[in-house]
Length: 204
Image (tube, rainbow, N blue to C red; front, side, top):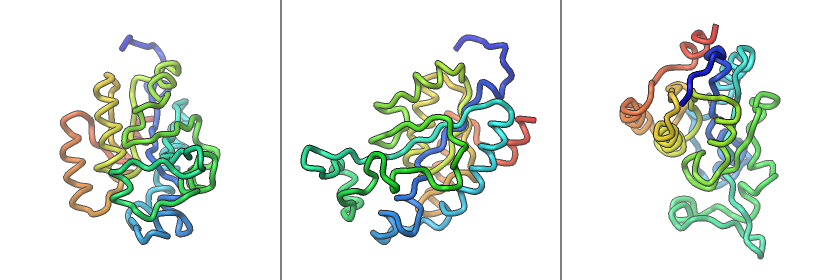
């Protein structure tokens, strides 16, 4: 990437992975299906504080929104892999423009750009890379859910695209602490693992 004379914060984006109502809200699709992730419920307030700090420093906040696009009959197009894991996903869940697809309330007014995604990585078949490069971003700090899924896939794709890549360890969660920690350890090969407080402090 070419060098920029802008301050580091202005070249940095917080990439928030899938902090959406259908994943986290007790009325959402996952809770209705019996899948809850207690550590993830702590993330919205923590991530919102980081987002406010970065925006105050001139940086950018991007959120990915997992989306189940409807087919011609209005039924969600769910990949076989996901359907096997989450057989309860039904019509209307994660539908584009729906309450369930939307970011959690804690992020209201903080997200500059939303990208709809259909797979783990926020880069796969989205406009994320175009948006970041157009905005002069060369550093991404990734957080959200789940650590070993959407977060890890996005981090590796960011690394492959030559972004300086950070992972906010306490801004992520997985279904199980062991999975969370194992994934963080693995991502150290391609990213800098830090935490929300240290990242926010680096912006001052």
